[in-house]
Length: 59
Image (cartoon, rainbow, N blue to C red):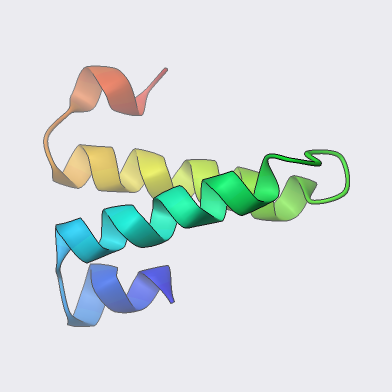
């Protein structure tokens, strides 16, 4: 779903809400949801790059 906001709709505000919810839901049990958590971190980094927050994107 995050790809929809990235490629088709291109709404960074909606994309941030979606990525934040992905991070929140997967960080409770990082070991069980390791793939989802890493994918969420990657999506957040891509979003921060799009918003030109380069220093935050590579933390």
